[in-house]
Amino acid sequence: MNSEDWLADTQASYDTVAVTYTDQVRDLLDETPYERAVLELFAGLVTTAGGGPVADVGCGPGRITAYLHGLGMNAFGIDLSPAMIEIARREHSGLRFEVGSMTDLDLADASLAGLVAWYSLIHVPDDEISSVLTHFRRVLRPGGPLLLGFHVGDESRLKTEGYGGHPMKVYVHLRQPDQLAAWLNDAGFRVEAQMTLTSAESPLGGILFARRQPDTQEGPGSEKS
Image (cartoon, rainbow, N blue to C red; front, side, top):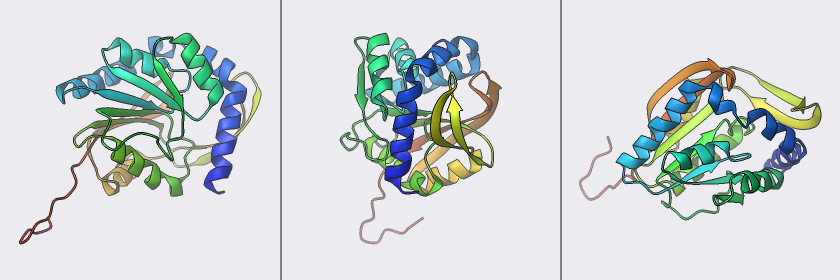
């Protein structure tokens, strides 16, 4: 499957389920205290690093964007689904939401103080992950924190129905934290923490904190470490 195929399927699927999906997840953070603590820790890391714009990539109806905004973050959301963005703008008026793809982020280099991908990498095929993480690194400032949430496992399954019984056509990729950590290291991030948890968000969820490493500066006489 090429990138156009899975992106088109993902967009169409979430356009179809946007209303019912929003109804199911709108208050999910009320049931997930550990996830709230993770987001609060992320906000603290951004603030300690000097603050600035934070992107919620794959924001859906904007619930994580809004929560980060409530923590004092200059947060905005990006999602592939125009229907999701329409709902996010309606439910969280005053916040910035844009239609866009994590495979080709329309953001300036080093323009972000932090980036969150909250269960939004789960539809990205393995052979596209490196490109996505390269975009994440490009738009983050050196030292900027990255927070990933994902489903833990070793399988990929085709989801053909969901969120009220509506038709969907998306693959859900479950991954091990060590695999994502290795991909992050290869993409120029330093992984600082990883954990797993079980909650209303996921039967077995994974959390990874990483930072964008600075570009390597090699001058005359310098040695690679």
